Length: 160
Image (cartoon, rainbow, N blue to C red; front, side, top):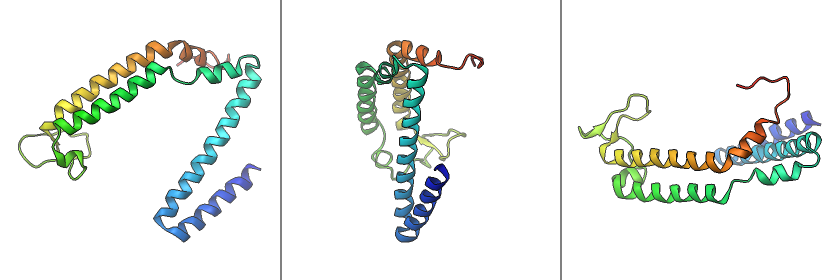
């Protein structure tokens, strides 16, 4: 059954690309990812029902993030958006230019850009601080769940 589905998806993807060009690639990828998500979701549910028949629903519900974690991510999104609009130049915020050829730019060799405008350095630092804060909040609220998921490993697997 898996080969038939794969063949169908490949054929449909080729037809979509021939029919709609670049937009067809996007639609084909959306279709492909939707099928993968559905397939993996069914596998996860069956795995939990087989390995933990009494607590499969509980683990599934517990896998949703805590409200505080979701709120911290949302606040970080709002704060970094506000930070970008108020610290970086309008061209960078709008995506018209990422680098700057002026001498006030901070050159970072491992990034695929020539330079980052110095006006964005505080924004990047603020984003790093918010990332670390979100990481700490996630760990403090989701630690029990992460330990519980780790305990589902097969007994013959060694921890990393």
